[in-house]
Length: 425
Picture 1 (cartoon, rainbow, N blue to C red):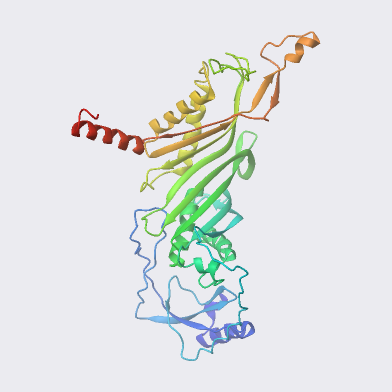
Picture 2 (spheres, rainbow, N blue to C red):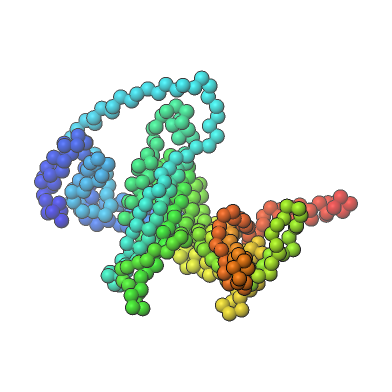
């Protein structure tokens, strides 16, 4: 407000002093009083891409200044979009410091097969205020990892010690907070897509960007049976995750969502029998046991489908997995093995949510062993007292897909061979 009240001369004087203190050059910007913010985005159907502001200046304009001070843009004036022009009196740029030469120790170079660089464990939380009732808050807390790929451009960083055009990991960290501030999102998937889009837009040398986002789960607190407006209770150990990858040549991102460490337990209707038994087998067969696991599940949506409520989808996937594990609330369902149960649950997910292309479920066992020591203490074990343990642990996993392309290709090849030569078929 103070800056907008300054005259043009005083605006120049006010920030020129700051510029001189930092030894920076200044750049003048000519901005119109009114600016069009019509989207010029070719991928307008994607909900992740923010509008690209039109740079058409109106005839009646006033001068404002943008100064780059220590990497931070300082405006002397107000405007939503700008057209840049350099003033004739810009001071000469300071001479770049002389770089030390790189003297590699190797006597022979070998092919660099893969490379990337990024920033990890960037923690950020955003408070979302309800538009109708600003006193009601929601929160999103993320732990972000970014990975940048520039196959040709960044190879020289490794082979020649040349950091030209290298986006520093500190810059990546700063971008996380900038996108969190400037954009609107309500899910880890949405934030990851916005972050990837930012890097591809700002740095044309990049081939692809990845954002791996762990979301800390907070539930709204309840006081005397009423949900609290701005208080939350942490849900642990379960976390949510989104892996977003975006190649420059692709029209949109590829998104994989997941839940991790969803800890579940049922106390009956689980057994394990009929498995191979040999001289190394000590495990007795049973038709009655506890079944417990710390489950991870990840799913990938069909390419090009972005009009998805990722929060509602994650909640429904959780419910369907639990339905597959537990059955109905009164009768339940018998589980002959964890293998059969998680496959059943995965099929429930694919049947109800047609935009999910595949789902992977990973279930390390949490063992609740019968307390048979009770026999030696004058009591009996009646499927009621157990000894919890998780080491060592069995690990059961499966991936279920909507369309098995490899299998379809093999089947089609067999049919073509049968038509071409029935004898060979």
